[in-house]
Amino acid sequence: MIGFDGTGPGGASGRGIDRRRFLVYGLGGIAAVLAAGVTGVEFVSHGVLSGQQELNQLEGKCSVPSPPLSFSWLGPSISSSFYSHARNRTVGYTIAYPPEHGRRSMLPLVVMLHGFGANHTSAVVGMTPAQAVALHIGHEPLAPMAMVTVDGGGGYWNPHPGDDPMAMVIEELIPLCQRLGLGRPPQRIGTMGISMGGYGAILFAEKYPHLIAAVAAISPAIWTSYAQARGANAGAYASVADFAADDAVTHTGALAGIPVRVASGDSDPFHPGVETRARALPPGAVVEFSEGCHTSPFFLAQEPPSLAFLAQHLTR
Image (cartoon, rainbow, N blue to C red; front, side, top):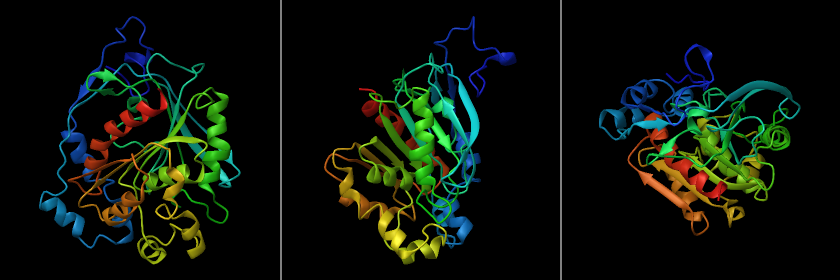
């Protein structure tokens, strides 16, 4: 059996085992468990849902098919921490390598940003980072790329007084990865995220278009006004001026020339904001609107095509 850290039984590294072997996971049970846990956490934790998402679930609007996932034998993962001067605290992170690669590999890098209430250990829904980069798409493995996750707090990945998760990623985390050969030119860097992390993935590309080569945002948490944002989560932006500076819709023009994929469920409470943003995207952006809510089954269903999109644009 493949361990989540990429090791075999008893902690063996897989020597003597067919490395082409893969596991197939039925996700119906996983999705059901996740749906009862972190689904719609932005809204539930701040009392914004008012029962609407629960009603959508009862009406079947949140039902999303969960095809089985298959993975190659997992590559290694490294979990550690560093003191972030940008965030004024110690942050944890995980770097996951694809199958057949390790610490000396030069690879494209996916920066995976977690949602509200999560951290570097739970940034990917229903999978570990090592599984994400070992995923099979249509029975074929993803092109090799590494993934890094990191603790970004609950401030929506934009700068706050005394806590700047954006600077932490751009000025501390990415250079750390580049020293290891990940995302170091000519290797490319992409951003990916779910909910709050989906907003962050877009925001980073808008702020640093010279650094971020592709974006995949799943159910991005996008508001169209500061009042709307503050009403849902007072900690999302420090001020009206900060919202204006980091509004992902207003600054969409900065994404010209950057491949972007955005996915949102039709019954997601953030969907109106995502629709507004989608209309502002540069030509060529991939927009996936389908049945679903701001729930883990939708997130999980959209992770494989999002990873495939990034692999297509980061590894060519």
